[in-house]
Every structure is written in C-alpha cells, then in structure tokens.
Image (cartoon, helix red, strand yellow):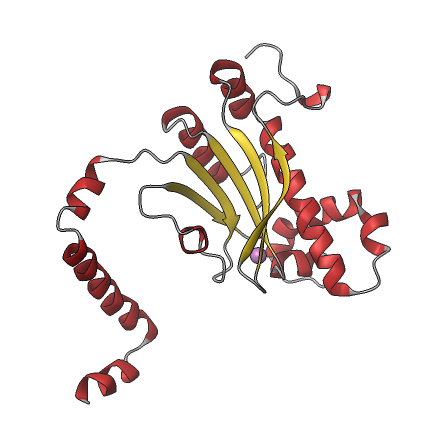
Length: 219
Ligand code: CO
C-alpha cells in the first residue's frame, strides 16, 4: 500500500493541498460545468459572522455550497466599530451584494469567551477580548449567579451574540439599508459543539427599533 504510506508521511499542509486536488476532481466528475458557472456568479444572500474556531466552519455546519454565503470570521464573532476589516466586509455585503440576512453565530465552549471570563493576560489578544469583557460587565449579575464555569461560558456566549447583533444595528451601514431597502434581517445564533445543532438566540428583523442614542436621523 505505497499510497497509504505516502499519505501518512505527508505534512499537514501537503495533505490539504492533496485533498484540494481530490476535491476539485470530484466536483468536476459530479458536475463538469461547476467551476465555470461559479466564476460568473457571486450572489450570496447571507453574510455570516462567525468565530475563527476550527470546529465551526460556516459552510460545513450549514450544508451550504460555494457561492451561497459571504463569510467573516474572527475570535468570538465580534462586531467592533473600529474594526476596518469587519466594517469593510459588512459594507460590501450589505451595499454591493445586497445580502438579505446577516447572521452572527457564536458557539458552545468558545475559547475567546472562556478567556474573557478569567483574569489571565494572554498578550495582545487581551485588547480584543476586552470587547467581550465589556459584555460580561453588562451581564455580570446573571452570569456570576451561575454556579459552574461551563454555564457561565454558555450564558456569556449567548449574550455576546445578542450584543453583536445590537452592534450591527448601531452601524450606519445597517440603518441605511433598513431605510432604503427594508433589509437585511439580523439573526443571532449559537452552534452547539456537542450535537452540531444551531440554536437561535436573538433576532432583529429589518426596521427594528434601536436605542435612540445610536439612531442616525440623516441617512
Ligand atoms: Co470561538
């Protein structure tokens, strides 16, 4: 079994290059026109904002195919108003691709959430986790009332998703789109690593009322 021996001695990055070639060949075998068609279309209806965690691949867990979802991922699926990367993805998805739905998907047992609940410094990433600590601070009475760490992680994961949805609604990008085309709807979800199921935790349909302080009156 020379082939098997070769595979086991491959380095991880070599293996994914090999797997890529096999995948591309499989796709062409199933549908010879697949790549040719895909080149010509980029019309996803969904923007996915998820965690960078390797266990939460947006397309795999949703059963979607290339071309169906526009994806942004960062540690703990945050919507930070000074994050030029996130804001650029959001603006392009909302104003150019005209997505109909934006999903923020957190997940069970998120390392970023778990770290934000501790008092340990992890280096530069402290600055990013600071955003989660702010959410923790807002909900600390409910979170600290829970008697085990896993339950506290789960609750902070849920309220974090809710706050990121509210952060989206506070952007001029979303407010302008709601005014001009009554879309996109915002959906806050949590993926459960234990059973692979996504649960809905907080929704904001287009046009929902937002906090007056953050509402722009000249868009
Ligand atoms: Co995570």
